[in-house]
Length: 478
Image 1 (tube, rainbow, N blue to C red):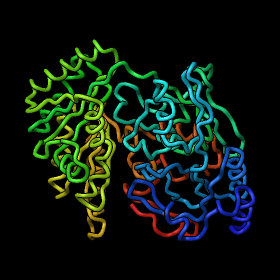
Image 2: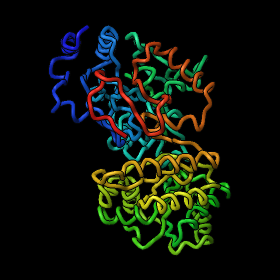
Image 3: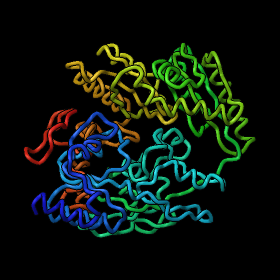
């Protein structure tokens, strides 16, 4: 099938206005939230699972790749069309199809924005637990692809813990259900396999999500520290005391100053670090746990321990944390965010290592992260326009990830591997592990057309992406 014939068939399936081929139309799909870019050849925006299925069949007939795309907020290049083909946007599949509060589930399409689920059920005293910092913009489908987490992962787990079943379109266009409406359906956990597969096995067109009952009480605390190591030591001591907060977040001085410059939330700009701790649940437990957290913070030298007095103050504190990534644009025009994970007890050591790497490369690294589960987000700030600076940034990022693995951690906690980290996945898995994973992928997609070039390593060196001449538009870089 010629490119022109494929475009004609796609227009027949979804309508002419939902097939984009002009540069001025497709340019907005050339990257996600990462530092990777590739100009798409074709962008198609289907309206339902039937149209998704037909688009997949058309692409299979033409022998071209399919790259699923949600809201484009991913941070590892997962939605970048590394080998060309068709970018399939799920933005129009944006309906909440069913809310079943008796059984605490909802059925949603993948283009539904994460926060919209909670908005739809909050009046009834329920919420949807996974809450990435981009939850006001990110889609459920993208969360499923990357098994996204968020500040409240410590208490509630990541996306896979809240997805009971998914409707998926497979490589031949077949529409199939994995899992169901109840936990622990018999047989292999194919839902668990699919969640986190980064679009390499198929395309989610519906999801059954678990709903949570609202908490009796929520208390939020801000602790201010003169030294970063005191803040990280406090995180270790809190969890060692048997307290599992709903959230336990840390921000360093660079991040605090950016937040306060952009949208002031009451963080002290002279602090070396702040901790944001939240306790949820039964009122009596919450009061006891919060009192113990305050005591641990003071024992570790916190100069101020501030308990939010009402929901408005609590929301203001969280506004600063949720908006931290965007605020970093006030410091530098570009940032490269890492997503390493370490055992909590290694937090003081790894933060000292990050500081040493920043100093050696002459870079500013702003840290804002899920301290409670050891999920780091060192944001390496830079200016893309300065020759050679990007190369230095990538080298620094590689050192950070290697340092995380060296202390028993991982190269990603919630952002996925995508294009960005596939060169480093060998730090965690040997060739036999990776071949086993590849066999699982081939069981779902034997052609390798779903989101090719992602997740698995290639023979190229770290940070290098090569593309087949003629298949890919110009512009992919890392």
